Image (cartoon, rainbow, N blue to C red; front, side):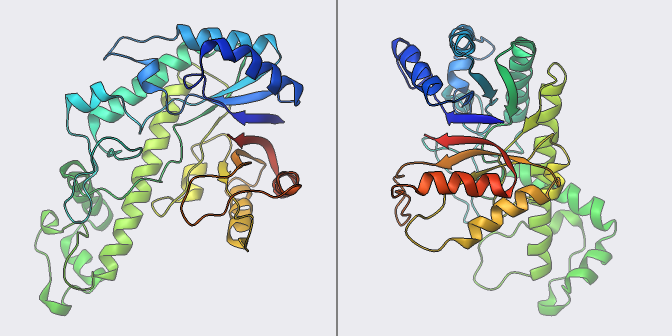
Length: 329
């Protein structure tokens, strides 16, 4: 079993690493999860990688018997990549989300995928045989971004519709577009469900979310393939959100994973169901890669645990089938 915490060596002065790792070892931790937001540190310039700092951290962790779940980042891109091309998510109102927050970049942009998969392969090749690397987590919270309506998504949307329906008449029949006189004559006439003044066609909406789920599944498949070209350690990721088919994503992984942020002051049974779903996706134990163990600065969420609640939540996760626990932070 992996037991430890999410840790961010890039956030901490290197002089603090030894004390932090000693504290982790003293609490019985045998693993930390690292790297999901560190693209700019792994690749400070386009094509120039710097893994020396993470080499030193892994060696220091392993010296204390602490392994690592290494997370190749993907959707929190470095500023230099943002300068190369417009990769921003475009919302249903046509607004392009600005750089400066996480998960504001479109997963269907070819350049983002090219550079992100190249980084994953570089990390896998470099660390495939490092004794500290116990597992891999692909990016972080796959499916947690807003739905995107950029031109790249629109082109893939048209291809997806063509592949699924074959004939535009079949699409019109399935969606009932004869109502309101909205029959399409070609697949490239079919819009993404952008904002309009009235209700959207429910057939279009259902197809759109299936399309988004397929996009995320393809992303996980290709990201995992980049790691598997060189590394054999188990691969997981903590997926979720509306644009995800949990069973399809799980089929691309060695193990499922999730975040668990229970509301400590009020009923949150829907989150308990999240644990049950995580086990059902592969019918085997799973990883809890983020278990809230302190108050979070999220308006409206009461996540400050009372004495004893962290222990109870940990036992709850284990009872549901977790074989890994990483506290955040």
